[in-house]
Structure formats: C-alpha cells, structure tokens
Length: 274
Image (cartoon, rainbow, N blue to C red; front, side):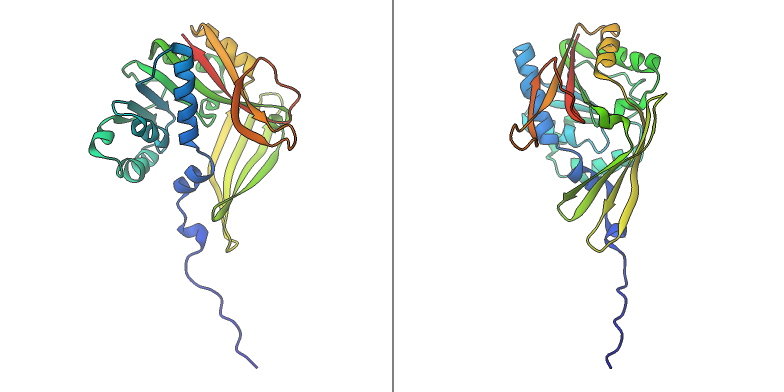
C-alpha cells in the first residue's frame, strides 16, 4: 500500500501575486488609451498634444506610455495613495530612461485640490471620478479640470451605461495565468450607489478576494454632459464602443455618436472641450 500524498506546502499563487501587476494586466490598456487620446486630440484641435495630466493615476502606467510616445511629451500624475504611487515609481518609472523619468511628475494629492500647470489633455479613467457621489462635488471637480486645461485643451473621461449598470452581477474573464472577476455586489436603486470589487483566481485554486473595492455613484451620460456644461465646457462628445455585427463582440473601435441602442452594457469615452 502506497504512502498517502503529502499536501503541497509553501505560499499559494494568490499569496505570491502582486495586486497592482494583476490590475495592470487585466484592466488597463494604456497603449490603446494613449492612441485614442493622441488621435482624437489632433482631430479636434489640428495639432499634436505635448502635455498630459493623469488624475487618479494609480501606478501612472498611462503617463509612462505618454512620455515614451514622443520626445518632449510631459506628464503629471496625481493620486492620493502614497502606496500605489511608490509602486508605480519602482515598477513603471524605474525602467525608463533618465530623460523620460524627468518628464513625469508624480504628485500625491487630492485631485480636487491639486494645482498644476495647464496642460493639453487631462484623463480621469477607470471610472474613478464616480467616487464623487454629490453633484456639487463633481461640479467643483469638473470646474477645476476646466481651469487646468489650455484654451484648446481636451478632457477625457471613460463612461459606461446600460441596464447592467444597475444590477448586481459578476463578470469573469481569463487573463494570462489567472482569472479576473468584476463583482458588482450591491446596488441601491434610490441613491444609484454601486459597490464593486475585483477578485483574482489562480490555477492552484487560491484566490485574492477584494483586491480592490469601490463605492461609486452610477452617473448617466446625459447628466454628466450637463454638469460639464455647467462647469464651463462648451462641447461634449460621446465616443461609444463598436460591436461586431455578426458575433456581437465588443471591438477596440470607438465612434462619435448621439445614439445608443438598448444595450445591456456599453462602454465609451466622454470627451469635453473648453
């Protein structure tokens, strides 16, 4: 009779994993986002952007992509979490050349209070501005963004809509070496407060639960455009993600439109100009 198998010892894959690296791999696509911003800015203004500010920057991966894009591009990266800024400094900025690092400024501050030089573009992505649940608070933030842009500057926000915004649900997606789970675990249909979390699962059956948690207000596209107008922006444009007509799969293409069918979920960018 053979001896029983010994249980594996040592740390699990979840215990060894780095949540920020997992987030970058599963959520962020900085190269595509910079492509979109770069192209859209030139289409709207007739010139190439040089300076960018990344609000709620986290690991500042988008700013890194921006300074790598062209010599002379500069980025200001703002976040109020020193831990994530330190991670970005060590893992994303350190591999850059000395010249590239000099063109990124990491600022630990509340995005509502920070004062920076005016820039060509500002991005506030990953729906982080939905943290502001009161209209007055969001209006004040948008006003500060308006004042932080040059005269022909452009603000880039991401946005999503559809009936699935207002439901508790989970979305699971395989990424190289792990599984990403987006968990909308609580929704208040009166306040539109949405509580969400990101979990990561690994091949050895270990799990990193609540790697990131959020409490947002679900803001509709129309009300956001109205608040931006009140904040002094003269024009807003919705760029909605396209879908494949045959497979109904989402594509990495975004078109300016005033129309969205009754999609269960749609993603897009909200672009605003002073």
